Image 1: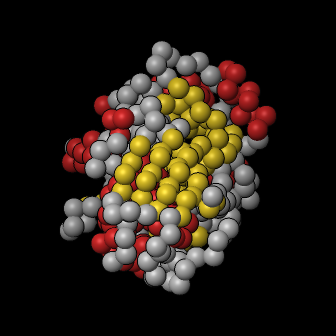
Image 2: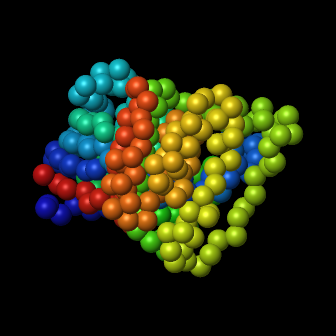
Length: 306
């Protein structure tokens, strides 16, 4: 691997990277209220998982160019990868040009953060090419410019996430966990989910969010199962048939299941790979549903320069 240039120095040489962009699940998602800036104040326990997109990024040139094999509908200027490159240039004053090839595996409009993770992967590549750390304030600001989940994916390790997504602290130690994720044949945008939540709270049928007490460490998978919570779940279940997915996962032997983020995916947590395999064999899928197996991660996959 070639050594990076001096910090903040624009590179005149093309740099090529390959990187995996993991999805995430929210083991806890508490919506504390709406902020004056229009975003929501959140408290979340977020964990990266092994289900991941793969990106090839060639840093150089004047602008970001994106190719998404099999998904040309995702190649527009508003794709978060392209927006991340523009945000990098705006925040650092350095070139944000890159040829990006995105190989999608993470379903979109699914509550798994796939687009945000892709954007963070582009920022990691651009930062590495220009000798910057992902902890550089300009990189973190660029991440938040793109989306509320993007700062989490810069380091991509279990974290407590507060504010609108910009305040991160290490999560209590977690045991390894295995997941089964069901993607129904429909997506849900975050805006739709939060609108549904606001409607439910306005009716007085759903209490306001709260900050849970955190243990110093989760010693067993069962402790994690008991901590699971998603304030958006009840609102989403009213408008979309996600509750049935959760019930089928539990009936297949999963000890715990939850809506992922703002949906539409529902995930089951399993204590062992054997339990994951057994649940996978037993789960009854409906037409149009897809099943993904994954495990939790402790750190971001390495960035490979090629």
